[in-house]
Amino acid sequence: MRTVLAAAILCLLPLGLARAEDPSPAEKLVNAHMVAEATLAAHYVAAALKAGMSAAEINAVLADIVKRTVITEFWISDETGRVVFTHAPGTDFRFGTDPAADLQSAPFARLLSGEAAVVAQGVRARELDGKRFKYVGVAGVDGRRIVQVGLSAAAVEGEAPPAR
Image (cartoon, rainbow, N blue to C red):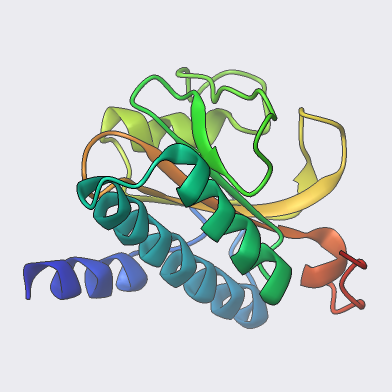
């Protein structure tokens, strides 16, 4: 029951935390859905680890979800910000731990420190490769981690999803 209540509270928290301006009603709706997706992913990873699944098995499930849904990406870190679970195994990425740094991913460091439970970001270029994405992240449910879902700019803007 506490888990369901916590997920409900996360969905009711003010969204758009990484943006100075107020999000539009459409963006608020997208944020709410992405918070739900990230929250589900956080619970999935916690349950999978508890069940003894390997990182490769967890990543295979995340990749399958990306193949079958509108979610474009999953980036799930350990307590240091290093991505350990993702739809794209082999990608080496680490979230910074300074939320004030001049990086697209910097605001998500607040999830590691416990300063925020949800971070929602508008579409922008990411530092990994300059591609434009919208990201929403939540804190882990089984310990300190960033659980982030991403949508490509094309998906957010209603264009056809890229061929996979």
